[in-house]
Length: 196
Length: 196
Image (cartoon, rainbow over all chains, first blue to last red; front, side):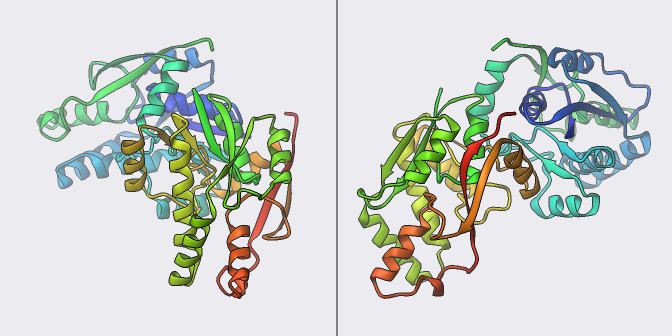
C-alpha cells in the first residue's frame, strides 16, 4: 500500500515518514506555492531518509488566498490550516493513504476530527498521523535516536514548510511578517539518518 | 527504553504493542480485578507476539467502585474510563513510557488531553498511543497484515478487557449486565502473528 507523506524536511514529518515506511510504501511530498521554487535542503533530507521525493505545486493563487486570510485574521493559524488541508486533498487524489507529522500538542496545522471524517468520506483515502499519540518528549527521544537534525529560526533554515513563502508574499505587499508570526519559532531540518 | 503496554489480548492493543516494540523494549500488562483470575488466552496472545507478559491486579475494591459508578451513570463509559486511568497510573510507577491501543475513533476508554497532561506531569512518565492517529480502516488493514485474529461477543471470547469482570460483578449483585452494556459488542483475540 502506497502512502503519500507531507514532508517539510523537518524532524516531525521525517519521523512520521520513517514510522509509516515500516508498514507502507512511502513517498515524500513537499508542497510549494511557486512552481519555480527549489527545495535542495528538503531533497537532501529525503535522500538521507532513502525515500522517494516529489515536489508538489500548490500555486500562487493559493498563496495569495492564504495571505488574504492571514491579514483578515491577524494571525497565521487559519491560513496555515487552509493550506495544509488543500495539500492533503491534493495528495488524496493520488494516494490511498495520506500522512503527516502532526504531534499530540500541535495546534497548527491541525485537522479536527469532523474535518478528517469529511475528508476521508469525500476522497475515499485514509488520513494517518503516526505521531498524534506521542507527546513532545517521546518525539524528541525517537528523533534523537533515528535522526541527525539541524535547528534554526524560520527563514534561516531551508526547510519546506508553508511559512517561508507566506512571509515572502507579505514582504512583497510591504508588510513586515514579524508583526503577524509569533517570534522565535524554531524550525528543524533533517541532515542524516542514524544507524540503529 | 522500557514501555509498559496495557494489553487485552485484542487486536488494537496487540497492534499498538508491535508498533511500540520497533522503538521500545515492550512489556505487555494485563489488568485484572480478582487476583485469582487467570487469563490463559491473553498469555497465549502475548506469547504469539513474542513479548514478555505481566498480569497486574487492580483489586476487588476497584471493581466494586467501578460497578457503583456504572450503576450511578446507567452506562459503562465513566466506569471503564476510571478503571483505565487507574491502570495507566499503576503502570506509570514502573515504566518511563506507558502505552495502549486507543484508536482515533475510540470513545471508551479514552483519556482526554488535559488528563494526559496531568498524568504526565504528576508521574513523570510518557503516555503514548501509537494508533491514535489511525482510523478504523487502517487499523484493520495493519492488523490483517500482521496478526491472525479471532472475533466473538464479550463473554464468549477470553480476552483481558475490564468488561468481563464488571459483567460478572453485576450478575453477583443480581443485575442483568445486558441492561447496562450496549449489545453486540464484538471483541477480538490475537491467536498468532503473521510472518511479513
